[in-house]
Image (tube, rainbow, N blue to C red; front, top):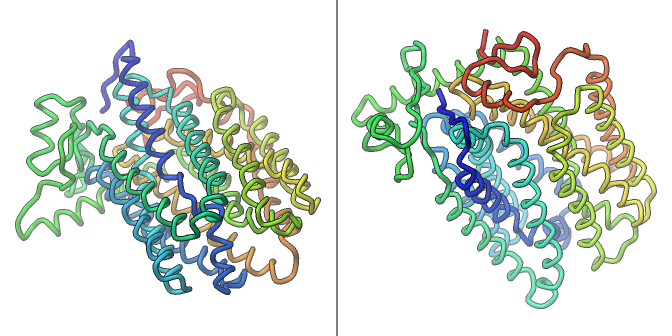
Length: 471
């Protein structure tokens, strides 16, 4: 159980939020982002081949997502946040040194594994560290700001990509991207972690023991010599000898069962998880094709990064508007999502660079609803498998994203990028319809104090009759 204070230490909360934002900012300061689709095209890859690479990327994340979430609940989440960007840096280096379909594929596999290691671990660490400081209700705003810094970094990288490529070529773009990933790993090592790795796992299948809060003597003893509690190094479970692999597998199975049981037994958690999947999957795939959509408008190659920058400016604005939006009820959230889908479709169908204003507005909405959905999932979870449940959401998201990549590959052979974009945002209208017909009393807005009490295993006032515990 997490510990809370009646008055959050403001300096510690701000310091944590800055570290979280620094991590996401460095992770996305990648000059290759706006150019790698063009890099693939320059080396002779067709749209279908590019889609196969994106599908491989998503498939890799699909296979690693849940195991990485279970691992994050067993060992140091901070350790995984260091390993992830190191693998991504290796993939980018391969693209620069051996530009070919095989190298691109290997790079996407490494990127997929690195992203899966971060997924679940980042959100779980952020929510629990904020809750430890008594500031769990700040999670949505903190994630919104972190996402905004991520978008600012993406925009800065996008703005720098064209001149760097023009002056020093693609090798310099790749080198800068690798350097950003290495700095991200350093930022990950600087994140705090005050939990006992594996404390929620009970290999025998019994009830998980509570994890000691803070960094006092009890937490240090629970972490053991190989643990990762507090600010010290580590990341192992602390078990040695021949029994370690079997105990590790039993502990992993216990964490996975606990997370799956909470999803099955708690409708509020299940609904929040499904909303995360439905909102994130489509635009998470479409953003990979934004440079190709920009090129299809007839814009010169030098203007493509600027159109991409416009879209990511909208995404940044969406992240900053999360605070007011987290109070919206399901119907209002559904109406907003439908408006975003219509704006994206209209902008893509226009077929002119000016249409990117509509695409940017749509992506603003998608990012906003994305962060709100994640915050509601984190507020709903109360068991020890937070990273596991977040990764189960990631598994669903990656599976749906894989389907979007396949659909884009099939549709792109029959239609231009604009109509394909418009067709693939139609599912958002269906999600909006589902949100609109839900009973008025279900799954309303997050309210102050709800996240902290949910994290502590208490009642969630955002849901009438909710207990915050798995049935």
